Length: 145
Length: 145
DNA sequence: ATAACTGATACTATATTGATATCAATTAAA
DNA sequence: TTTAATTGATATCAATATAGTATCAGTTAT
Image (tube, rainbow over all chains, first blue to last red):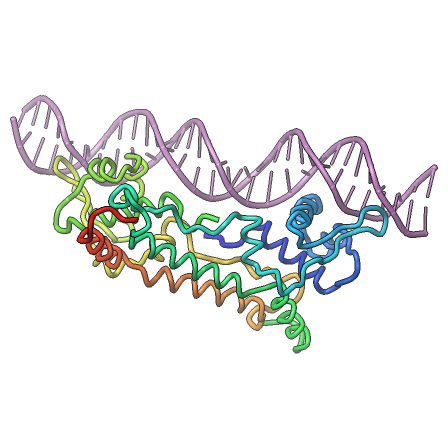
């Protein structure tokens, strides 16, 4: 079970790069080369992130992409939602048996509870937090592990 | 993002049925009809669960499947692992940048931490627990929600 | 004018998920 | 002892999701 798909993974990496170079426009080509992300695939992801107001773009020569939102205001939960759809553990799996009427369904509650835990974990980790972790790691004797 | 696939969902329902009729052999056909699970698909799932020692089978007329393990010893984490593969948030997404050497990678740690939280949640919910929830729900004024 | 860019969109390939079909072997029971 | 109900094993197929490529029009700094 893969929790993060390539799309989300690439998007996070692109945002980390933009986050570390705030105020400049960074081209898709630069991000693609630097982060080793397939160029056209990345273009699509960047467009999508514009639609969600996470970044802005500038067309033409010397154009590129730039962070719009604060890094701390971008939890990876949001990126997962954008690129993989809302986290849903399952539809009420017990409907056929006892859930003619759903809201009191204790089993559903159990499942929803997990859903919330998972989501809240992904909410805690923001691009801002990852950027700070990254800085700290770079400060240390280089190479990790 | 769908956390439980049909396979896992069906497997849980099948186990709940076997769990509520312990000591008897229940045929795939009965489970299929009762739980509205595609027959041949279910057969495959049951075979898989035999391989993992969760259930046993008896061939021939009046044959079927029966729980082998204690319901409390079957966390849905295990079913997810069997039918969807081990939960892995992602490969170290930052390798290219700083993770020539992985084990000290703080970012990787962040990701692994979430992985553990998610897994531990799915570990807490066992077939046994769901069976008790189910009983409690059936005891209440029928229909939930 | 031109080269470096993004916007938009269509397309292809591959993998995963969900489902069906078939036939041999086993067993309870008529 | 035949038959119907069943599992074991395996092959195949369809639908969907994921990953990646290609193309062309429009914009802008130089």
